[in-house]
Length: 149
Image (cartoon, rainbow, N blue to C red; front, side, top):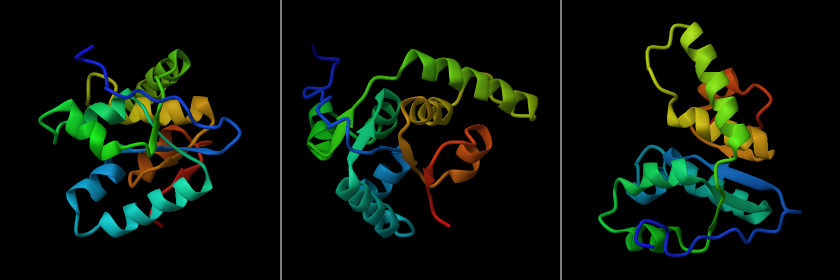
């Protein structure tokens, strides 16, 4: 189908630890961000050496913005990332995190993509590689976050 990734992957060894990679980390490397590219590339390499790199449809959508064609995005991702669907339980948990966000004075009217990403990692038992540790640690306190110190 034209709207589906040309190479969907769900091939990782479930016995290996998985790290869900946040879009900001992938974009740091893709764009060559002068402040974060080196840190992000190193963390991705370390996570790949230890287990499986995972993305979900939310991450895929966020990084797709910089690509004109799905083939370019899929080529950039290569075979490095397993593509996992967003579990229903993660959507529920994202809603609960969003409710806490609103109760804490958050102004957005719809759940932010980060809530779906954090909830997916939490529900699936994945570690999360991100630069936005504060939000994830606030709303998903049991989540194992890999982030700058």
